[in-house]
Length: 92
Image (cartoon, rainbow, N blue to C red; front, side, top):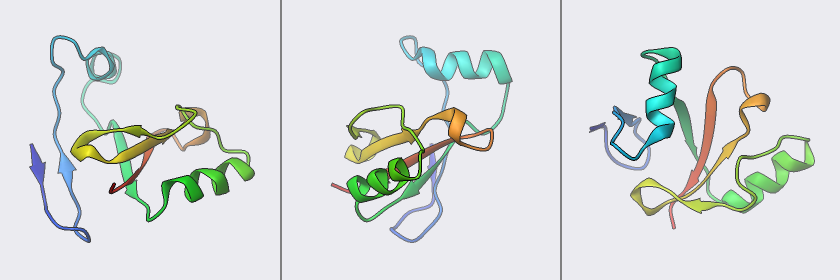
């Protein structure tokens, strides 16, 4: 379920695991309820990744992937974030 709409609004996504989605299921089993990740929209994901890599911040994927809503996405590796997964996303 998504709450919010539009480019400049806040969107809250409530998720539950499907049979084949082990990522969400494992998160809930380990941490119970809580925030899984925060997504930040960027104008140019390649520039954002390059800037952060230059500053010694690493990512989950080598290159951006197609994520929900058909956006380009990548996650800052959890060891480089303050206890929460951070996703960068860009409209295609």
